[in-house]
Amino acid sequence: MASVWHLFIVTAAIEIGAGLTLLVAPAMIIPLLFGSAVDTFPATGVARLAGGALLALGAACWWARFDGASAAARALVGGLLVYNIAVVALATVGTLGGPGPLQWAAVALHAAQAIWCVWALVGPDRIQGAL
Image (tube, rainbow, N blue to C red; front, side, top):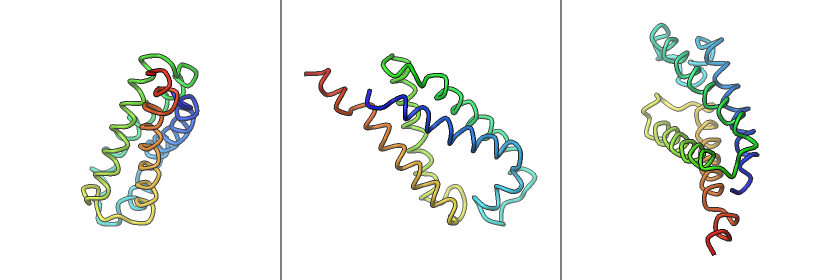
């Protein structure tokens, strides 16, 4: 797969950082992402849950970083593609609240990662292998 280990390393760094931030300081991060209209108490619990999930996703990418040619790595990239598309879709249709500058930056980042996932799944290495 095309640069899968790079994809895993970058994704691990981003998602572990986001996960830890949401786990440790959700009340500070939630208003930056979703604006001041969010009720902090329930949002804090959801943010911590999301932080744990992002931490797990980042850890999976980190541990798989040198295993880019396996079926499991392809499955992980496929899962990352679904996740990144979901983030872009939810944020752009307003499901995650009124988008602020940080949320638009997250949309751009996840859109780029979705493109990277597609490239990793069908890039030149995959095309040459099929020929």
